[in-house]
Structures are given as structure tokens and as C-alpha cells.
Length: 408
Image 1: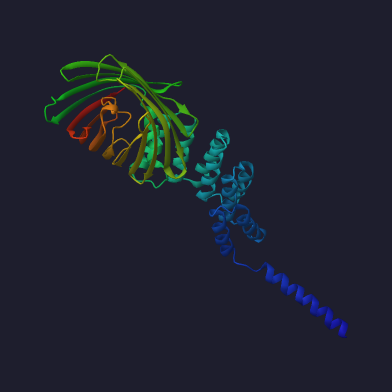
Image 2: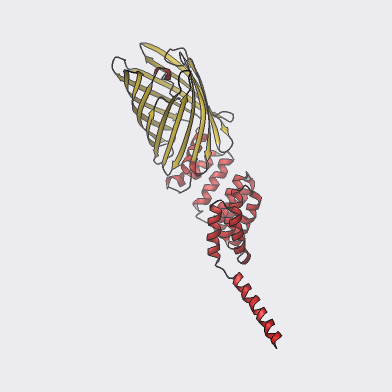
């Protein structure tokens, strides 16, 4: 009899233990797994998630979380398995398609992405969720069908669709779509003192090729110091991969107040969370050659874009530095904005100033750009700068700039 009671006691203990092990709140495990994975502890988070999936294999949010964790590690094939399971478990759940499409884009699997997109549109019905429309636009973008991508993205942007990096995406689409354009600018610089006003005007034409990206030819003429000069320039913006592009500039002039030769090169890289980094070099061949190392960091925050640029000018005697902080607030489109710039020194892309002539310079500049129609844009800027020519000689400058661009 004692042996029978002991056996029953052991069996009940095992059953109670098994029941205790199987009894858990899957929502609580999902929360724990998410905390671990979002903190970069992917394996630890997946162990918790797998425990929940052992009893709840169709918990879509956990399946998506596991898929995202694999995708963030670059294990795209493993991620696809869990996104597929999530879609099968909840075919009318948008998040599963969103995660799946993101992973397919990252792995450059555009054909499968097109199939998943069609499945999403079929299962989710009408109206198609904004998150899916945005991914459809991205698919056109990756296929270099920029007009179709823009047509889908613009209504989302106009109504304030909350997508990280949306403003930067729209600007990239504008950069790729605008194949041909002509434009002109006029600058008026007036000085307090004996320096007579400067008059500068330029005309440019822009086109696009697969090799160079945007290709811009510019002619700038200026009247200053009782002289007249012309500067010729060529700019190119070739794409480098999906997340980067370059800036190349080559120009020259026979005028004393323009560089005899100027050259510039930069590489821009788009990072997650709407950050952009840039690094480059400028050469300005005035009376003395000026070499400039430049770098910038930019960030999109809602309708704002902030950028800080730092410049280093090495020389035999000393090393000069300058910097500019730029902020833009965008309105209805990604090309309508108000801007403000504060800086010290001269920008390396401002070819009308010889940096070797300045000890220090401080400036503030304001501007507004408006796209009046899909083909016509106007802009205007004004700025004030205080330039130190020598230790006891300063030049105060008020600048006015207006321009337009016509696209076709």
C-alpha cells in the first residue's frame, strides 16, 4: 500500500510540474523577448520567443519579431521562414507583410518582393494600408522606375504619413526624377566701406545619365573690383549602391577673383534612422592653392533637416577651421522649404571667396524655396557676413540672391 501511495505521489508531482512549466502568459514572454531583441540581444530574445512559440505556434507578433531579429543580423533566409509563418497564421495582418518586404529589399530579392506585395494587396483588401503602399513605392524605386515610385509616395508625404526617413526618400526621388532643367541665379553683394558692389549671375543646364547621375553644366559671370570674369563648372552626382552617392565638381576661370582651377569630391551615405554622413575634399586654385577637408552629418527629424559641416584647411603656417550649421523646414513638398544657416569661415563650395584672404568670417543666411508647379521653381536668399581681412580691417557684406529653375 505504501508503495502504491508513493507511486501516485510521484506521478502527481510530475504532472503538477509539467503543468507549471507549460503555464505562462505568452504576452508577457513576447514583451520580454522584444526587450531583449530591441536591445541587440538577439539570441537571448529568440530563446524566450521560441518558448512561447512552442505552445502558441501561430502567435503572429512573435513570429514577426523573430523574423525581424534574423533580418537585423543579416540572416535573411531564416527571417523569411518566420515571416512566411506569420502571414500564414494571420493573412490579414499588415505587419507580417511589412517585415517580409523589408527583409526582401535588404537582401535584394525584388522578384519575391513583388510576389509578396501582390499577396498583401489581395489579402488586405481596399483601401490598401499606407505601409504597403510605401513598400510598393520602394519596389519601384529599387527597380529605378522613379516616376511610378514618386506617384505612390507623394500622396503619403502630403498627408503626413509617419515613416522614418520619408523626407529623405522624397528628396532622393526628386533627384532621380528631374532629368532635364535650366535655371539662372543673380547675386548682389553690397559692402559697408570703399568696396563697390559685386554683381554675379549664372546660368546652368541639368540632365541625367546612368553613369553620372545628375549632370550640371554652369557658367558664372561676375563684375567686381572694376573687373569682369567668367567661371565654368561641371557637377555630377553618380549613385554608389542603394544608400550612397557622390558629388564631383570641376571648374576653372581666367579671372583673378575666381579660382583658376577648382575641384571637389564628396561621398554621401544614408544611414538608418534618417541620418546622412558625408566626407570630401576641395581644391581652390587662387593665387595660393587652398586644400580643404570637409565632412558633414545630417539628420531628418519630421519636417526638419539639420546639417553640421566642419572644414579643415591645412597650411604650412597654421591649420584653419570653419563650420556651418544649416536647418531647413519643409512644407508641402520635399522641395518647398525655409532655411537658416549660421557659420564661421567660408563654405568650401562657395567659389566666389578666396579663403586665403580671410582670417575669420562669421555669417548668417536665410532663404526660401518654392516649387510653384511640377516644372517651375523659384528661390531667394539673403545673408549678412563679417569678414576679417586683417587684424584691424573688417569687411561687412550684405548678400541678396534670387533664382529660378524650369524643368522639362
